[in-house]
Amino acid sequence: MNEAGENFRDSPGAIVRPPIAWALAVVAGLVLDWLYPLPFLPPAMLAVWLGVILFLAGLALLIWAATTFRRAGTNIQTTQPTTTIVDAGPYRYSRNPIYVGMLLGLIGLAIGFDTLWLLISLVAFYVVIRFGVVAREEAYLERKFGDVYRAYKTRIRRWL
Image (cartoon, rainbow, N blue to C red; front, side):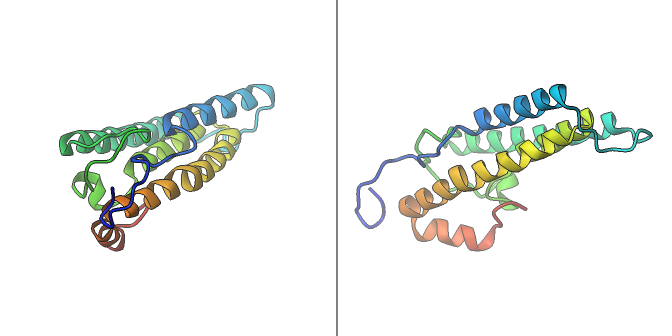
């Protein structure tokens, strides 16, 4: 039940699990690059190192966010109920640091592999996450936590 006493499904009802969407975006981008390479960076650029740095920064953000969720005692998986609104760690700056980390990781891979296909797949990944996951999570959290979540939304940006 939510604060108004209404029954509802106690999970966001995301259309896809985000790690699966991320993996599909990576595989699709790399397969398309193998079939029809689309480099986009100048040859003299040290793209591999920049890509590695961005990928690792995204991974670090994702791990920090997941650890913060675990410490708060709430579920990370979108198929499980959320038990509390987390506003510590990276959630002080973004309501979705796990997804920001995933996006940063995809950008790092695109630069590291020098393929425009991964940037194109990033756009598709973003659309799926934004409208098929985040929009559903936000609606779920508003139903479940009401004013507590609405206050959090007014203080913290969705992405950065």
